[in-house]
Image (tube, rainbow, N blue to C red):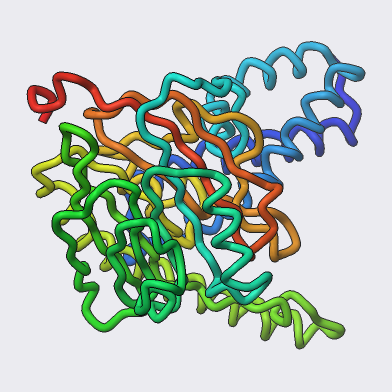
Length: 339
């Protein structure tokens, strides 16, 4: 089969893109202190998969043999694609527990009262918040007064059900924060975690440049900030994982990981917990839309003691620089045996 030079170049590019998409999975085993390259590739997944699909369609009209080849290879990328967009579930009204994970951005965008109104209308049972001012809960007449609360710097948990214990997780003088709260849900006790990993501190100005020199300087700074954030996340996750694994109760984890799906951070939690959106997601899973393309950095995880029914990101809630994740569960009746 004779192939034109242009098609040979596109074929090579297609294989390179496929290699990059496959290499993202190395984040399961390679920590960012050793090598960060695969973390950068995970950040580029939306662009890479889009280019892969465009080229696959191109081969349909040009060379069908290549089309079928790359269409088959697409099977290997579907698991990571479902972390970003999923249609595997529809709303289920038989749930026992509705959880919300939401980075509030300190109420800066629309005000804390607008956030409070939104939350009350959603009627969640358990709420895991990040980027909060702890003073929002210092007085009972300030925020969600009808909820039980566990409040710590920058993270908090609210619940319709009684909170019988709570604790901040010490992340040792880093800019990440985490906490847990034990909640009595009818006849069961669960432990909810709210997690906020180290911010990356990227700004929009870093993506603006008018000269080659500015581009080089900004690119170097972006790589420095990303690398520092990745390394810090590894240390923070060590302590968070330890707390989760020692829980005597069924576990729900909600939080802002400041990391995309298929990243080292994601795989660290997904190695022993289930991702609600991955299992029963509905729609687009992106949670952060402040940069030049949408990112998914917020998640809800849970252990085997829960049956996941439905999960979605509410993109209509434009009250923060993040969107909230809603997840619906049932607690398994034999959860003590599962533990």
